[in-house]
Length: 290
Image (spheres, one colour):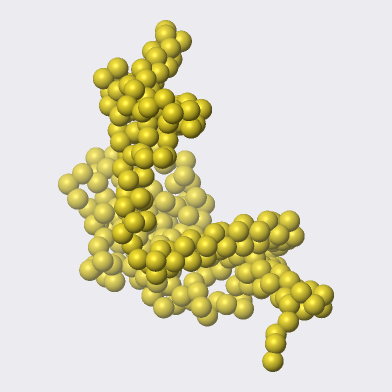
């Protein structure tokens, strides 16, 4: 079945190739190996039509896809020719300079990345992370609000409603820890109040909370309950860091490794560039004329 489809696609490409070749004279056809279209002296080879038609395409769609591909190819060549003819020499020189600059930038970037990958130390210890953080922590500021909190959302008709509330509000750690064993009776919950979370995550957990009312609810040491027609939220706010506060190490730690790695890359790139320049001067391959 699939082989038949492949044969049909091959036959279709051959057929379309024959139709386009019919418009070219014999001398022109001999200029490339297997042309299917021509724009002045430039040809489209049949090999470039491979894999442009999906096996799932109908015959009608396949014909349209091939025609569209060839038309786009022809349009691009015609526009290039028109641009070459109509643009001024100064404009074309400017474009060529940009192309050369882009090519140079790509070559340099690829080469430097190769050198860095071969030499960089990717092992990052806890001490490395802490040192990096301590050196720059005054730059790591909270952009909105960070919160440590715990909450449970319980249906109002839950038979264990009072039991869950009692354990959640208990000052005894073992009582609070036992809530995890009752998690199947909760609509939603988050019981680890030692982890910093962004306030945007809090909005997702507590739908009654908004940008306008967050200052009313989100206060360090606050406890509150919010009830709707179906369920009740029990919420404990352990700690809050306002906008502009220094971002805690624990919150940043997952991102610090990449920061340290990027910093090492930047320093290594600078060293490579300096070494290349020094070596060229030493070997008389680079000099400045006075």
